[in-house]
Length: 135
Image (cartoon, rainbow, N blue to C red):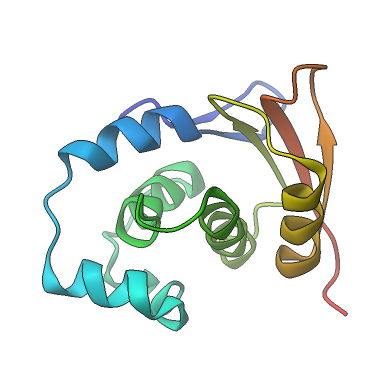
């Protein structure tokens, strides 16, 4: 999943969800991975185990591989991803998807991840997500 998170020229972070799905197929599950998939409360609590000196993009990439799961819905994965981005103080994230999400999914993500989502293109396969202040 080397290319799933990149910094763009305007300092936004881009997360390629398609690459994540592909990398997840090759990821070997451990007991801790299964536990984190079942108990999402662990999702942000393991950031201290990351090596020092990583960029925000690299941290997000590594955490995403540990926290996101192909065994849960895309909405749940994106909510987890956005919570990770918030924990890393990433104010805006561009997410590329292999397909568009429906309005209900987007509303659920906005509500649970406390963000504002705009479609970066008409197909709905590129989302620009702005973090908002928590209520």
